[in-house]
Image (cartoon, rainbow, N blue to C red):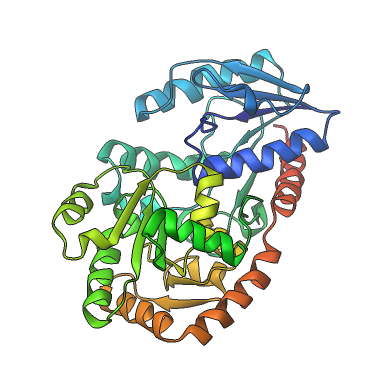
Length: 377
């Protein structure tokens, strides 16, 4: 079988949510199924580390798909050409896009519909594109995979897709995320926070991640508690980050906030493992991978009560209202003052993470690739 794959988000040094899902699952699928040929379709020069086996044929074809007009040209002309040329049996697209001009059956991974709930958090051109074309992609696809039961129900609700067409394949954490020994935790704290305990946030910085309310919550926490606790923020400035930048420069206690920018997985795993707790007060998530990354390190979390996050977090987190920074601050104070509770949640976190593995995710994805391939027009 020839499996063509949209690999435009396999970007060296820039793997985030969708990119990590693609990287981890594709690596397993290629290695587990050497009898099948995988055609990886890139929209720009690729890194050799993404060619996971001899059964991968890399194809680079433009234009670089980073704008709605270019999305259309790349999918309906360039990708459609590659699918015809290589006589693909099925098209797998981890970013939820597909070619509307191709008759090759498609299996799409639609991670979330954040753009339906918060269209103002995207560039206007992208918001219009996603809201117009995602329902068309979803209806054309033979199979859809998503990453949480919440996202499955969201897709059904918005696009009237039959439930039996959608499967749930959860995300997981990289194997680098492990609990740190006491000595290593102390070393990490000395390196990044001068030996102080710290809350951590990890994720690309844009409005949906709600970093402004997190900073307001931290200010309130510091005012209400005599504590040397710090806040470590890991992630690149993505878009619409002006308000975050202003707070970074002008907020009280700004010297207590450590901004680390984007970190590779090895560095982030160390910083996550050294944290007192993750604070992930995002407005909306299809899954929320940092929750599982923290759990796999034995680090408990404070998460939002919205979208998929309570589903993913289970009973190893405190739940907060992301629109109420005082509530986030209150949960931070609760964990800070009650170390016994913090330790109980940390134990539950290690148990909770066992149900999330990339092997299971790859199994579900493979089942749906096969189901899609069987439904040729």
